[in-house]
Amino acid sequence: MRYIIYGAGAVGGTIGARLLQAGKDVVLIARGEHLEKIQEQGLVLTDTGGSQTLQVDAVGHPRELDFRAGDAVLLTMKSQHTLAALEDLRVAGGGDLPVICCQNGVENERQAARRFSRVYAMVVVLPASHLEPGVVQHEAIGCGGILDAGCYPGGVDAFIGNVTEDLELAGFSARPDEKVMRWKYAKLLNNLINAIQAVTVTSDRTHVIYKLMYKEALRCLDASGVDYATQKEFSARVGKLLKLDTAMVRGGGSSWQSLTRGTGNIEADYLNGEIVLLGKLCGIATPANQSLLELANQLAASGAEPGSIPVDQVEARIEELEQAGDEG
Image (cartoon, rainbow, N blue to C red; front, top):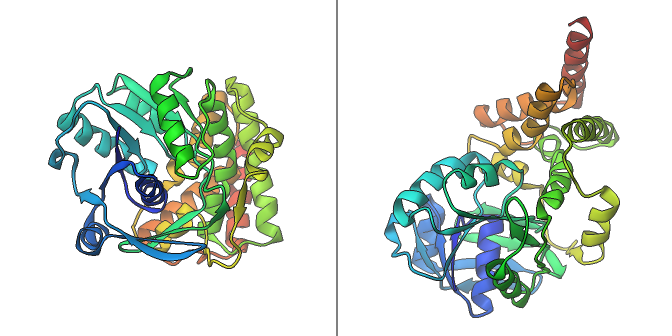
């Protein structure tokens, strides 16, 4: 099997590097200066053991690949880039390619299923960073991360069994799961905090805000009839296996990293925005998630540094939306 990693940032670069180290056939699809560095010098992987440079094939677009039987495409870009990537992938490789959505949020699978006949979902719990072109940092100790996967919208097959087996060989904990989407919804709940990390400086006050966001999300998921793994289940799966190397500097999650790199965009539309959408469909107010969604996008568009908005301003916007909802 050849693994085509579409989006060679923190998650994609780390998965690709580990599969390569395990002797698997890997090609990365990257862009810009990051692609140039990988093609010139290789991909630098930094982990608890230090840094090493891996020579890996890398291209800038799916049309540069000669697709063949046995290819597995792992989508690892941010959700705001998925639609364009899927269109390019379908034109280049056809709609029969097996596509695995290794991303946060739950919208990517829906987009892929409209365009590809074989779509798989993967829950990704993988502490990694990408802040410098040509370099990814893997911050886990022992187990490299949780990468459970299954068919979308449900079930498992021999293909995803082979993929998870290879990921296990590469140092991750990966198991086939017939109901993997319930774990992706649980991860969505955890990812709501990404916008807080990006927008303001975390504190006891931001923890209160996160609890508001979490409660809104639970109400929306329950009203929508969505099946999701409980926090107790999620903690039991992740907490026993995944440990962070506290000696490695980790500034923040994926949204924080997007702002730090000055990408001009952020994933909040597909995290907090998913809850806002469900709230609108179910008639449930979501002022905390709506506020963080707005502020995160404003910050990304302005090119400001992460944490630039005072927590007072965040709280004031939530209160403003709460009052508007009460008046409405």
